[in-house]
Amino acid sequence: MAENFNYKEAPDVRMLGEGPKPEPPRRTFLFWLGAGINVVAGLLIALPIIGYVFNSWRGTGWQKWITLGKADDFPKGETRLATFVNPFRVPWDGYTADIPCWVRRKDGGDFTVFAINCTHLGCPVRWFPESKLFMCPCHGGVYYADGSHAAGPPPRGLYEYETRIVDGQLQIKGGRLPSLQQTA
Image (cartoon, rainbow, N blue to C red; front, top):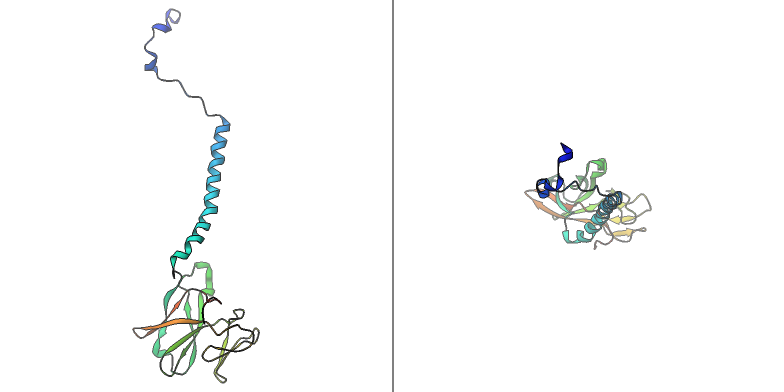
């Protein structure tokens, strides 16, 4: 029967539809694969750069008010060690997220809170109440009770945190590590 069939008299060819398209050549596949990998690599490189450039528009996003405790817990005329948890901690910070600071309550009731870091190389300073001095064990930096530089290699006085009293609680503005760019 197939011998008598005339293909020219068959139903309209448009009804049969187009035949299968040829498979894309390997060269085209590899081109698009390479282009996709390059786009992903470009994004992985560009995103941190864009974040760095636009980070300055965030303002003071890396600082937050942190409560140190009741204001009455710090006696007038004394300097005490206090600790706060970095508000921007991540799980792998561990114990380094617990940040100590020196809280000094002046006789008038005002507070001054110093970062524990020496301004020379960042070693932790200690308070000696007998001599009323902060001393750095690393290179012999010495600071007066008001945090000003007394002796040794530090280039300036101790770093101070901004303070305020809210509902009887002493708060400091923390979260950012102090640096030499911070004005005295």
